[in-house]
Image 1 (cartoon, rainbow, N blue to C red):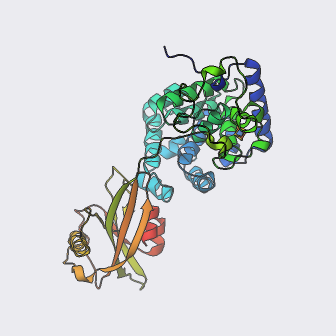
Image 2 (cartoon, rainbow, N blue to C red):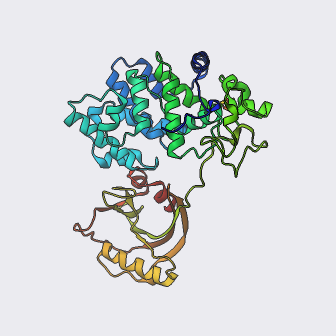
Image 3 (tube, rainbow, N blue to C red):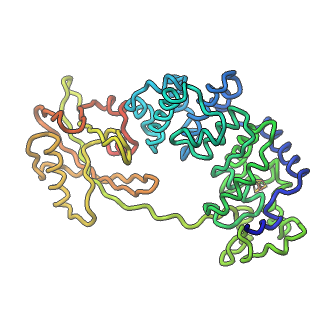
Length: 414
Ligand code: SF4
């Protein structure tokens, strides 16, 4: 078995754990933000309905800011107030509501999971973190812990980006916070710290602390309710962590949880020495030619052709202007020709490459792709008969375009 980590990285004193729980919960009761899913979770008597609300909010909050999520969450809950209602929705409706929120597979999997609960689990949500993670597609360890603790009162911890930051600072953990060794240790710590009588509130409090006080760049340490338990702050103020019996075992270089010897404590950074992450992988660079085909609609207003993407892969099932991924280093003239050929497939009539007007470039960053759209436009005279044998396509007004399941990137293109 691996040796236990040095004491400065642990919470081993029961009195300290109790004090930390009390301070954190008292602060949360006083200062927590008013959020619609919290209100519902606190007032809804039915545990499965609470779980559904927490689940929807947690999936939306992955990779997305709270301020953006609120409106989407409210519209979602209005349209599908229960799991049963969501199970009956179509993917098209889900994509339309999700449009602009990004990471579209989240909405799709949420709906698939709702269908599974209704059809295979007799409409009853699994009630423990273990079962939630095992049985529901798209529900990972974090989301399972959040649903189980907030909705069903299971005393289980959660570890998300905010919790990672808070715990790494509280215990001076400076090894790569995305490494499995550190993540495992943080889960152990979260499970040990979680308050047994108010696990959901405790978990939300820890995340809230990371979101509003222990923020990445300029944490508000003076206002922090757990500052007396914080080793990073102690180190900043006094130049060293709290004296613990075997702290001498924990030196730069010899400890699996300390910062690497090559990047020791930097006093100009203070508590923001923690957490640390290995350098991010550079996103893949991609270029796509896209064309806004425009015609005059029956009332003279412009209409645009949009086509549907395949039902799996990036932006699955979303609508876009006809687009063609380009090979690296393809010359402008060749791009234009390739795009003209591609458009011909959609319109069923010859498209002259010279008729395409280059409008400009739109850059959009997906999580792992740095995408540049080369935007062309092509006004069409007369009607175009769309081939029903191809993927679905349709003409839309500007208003209809914005109400369709289109990505933010395509809105930028328009
Ligand atoms: Fe974060 Fe500062 Fe609080 Fe420590 S004292 S947990 S660094 S806000």
